[in-house]
Length: 452
Ligand code: UD1
Image (tube, rainbow, N blue to C red; front, side, top):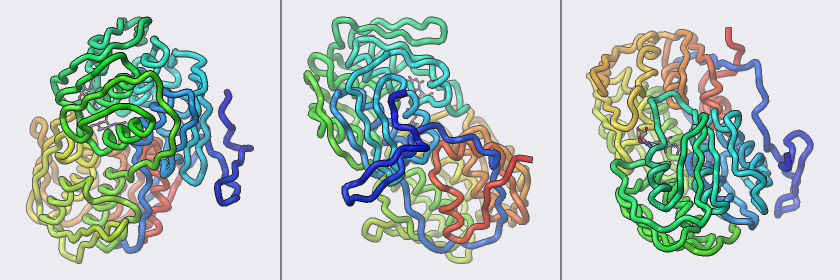
């Protein structure tokens, strides 16, 4: 292990202060459940973290250069960030995650191009080391990825893209074995449907390929624009970010940079839904509403007040319950699938009814039976769920098997009568930095406890 170890390491920042370095796996804790007592309105401030789904890609992109990289505003406390740090460390990158949100990454040399099962199984985003490794080293063996249990989630689009760029791909013993001994070549790749991960993986690889790569029907998420901007600063030639056609002209090498990660729109939206459900007024610090117009429309339509105020977003709901409203998940700029469960939790106490349609992932309604156990009235029909508002939810012991479903149950707990125990918070910690502290800070009654 060449990475700096969590417990002993310290660094000095520009202002001369000593900063703890917190690289490493999250220590197992016996406080693996949350107890929420409902009923409090939310009031105060929450500082929004850097975007998980941009941070992970920035870390992978650091494999593309032998020069040091520094990212600020990174959600270094997240389980997923620590998991990826372990994998990158194994590949030979020196990784320091500082408690002030700075990630210092340096892949001076790649020691191995094999990403083993043990390090990859916890997180699907691990497959995003494939493009950079293939581009820089001409080969990569990646264990097939795991992650949230929200459908089959294949990676065929990633692999077809690399094949189109001249790589030979084999699936063998649970591993993706990719080879491009003479380097990757630019290609025109048209995705049959929009994939965030495939767009990012191939965009990273194309920065070092020979010639021009065009990605048609590419994803347009803000995290991809952020990643593309970081790559451009590194010397990559990329045009069309934020549109569905991205053009990348390969260069010989990329240089190190310092880059600030964008704010987490999903964390922002989650706390907006929390206020929508529990009521109150909260200032979400250091975040951007322009990433969330597909959520702001329905929330204001349902009765909330939301406005950007400098670098903050102000969210308010008075004593009235929200009106039921329909949403359908879609690729950006549509309603994000990663906010579907939270929006549904918010609708459980609406006036009237709302319909939630999931078009991105099959099997992403696992929070529904748990919300119903708390008293919600939700009926699933195919990929739609009809949520009929109820007068009250009741606390219960609940459990979720994916990140966003877990947080939806926490939100429900904020208004449920009595006590809600959310088990397996491992999922929550993968994607929500300091959620207990952030919610406590705005008046919620929530604490970590041991699973019963
Ligand atoms: C990313 C996000 C995730 C979000 C999702 C959709 C990260 C780390 N994760 O995931 O939080 O929910 O975008 O906004 O950024 N698919 C295939 N073949 C492929 C790739 C995808 O069939 O090769 C399917 C998936 O199963 C899914 C759909 O395409 O049904 C969209 O997936 P994709 O956009 O690739 O999601 P991720 O990049 O995995």
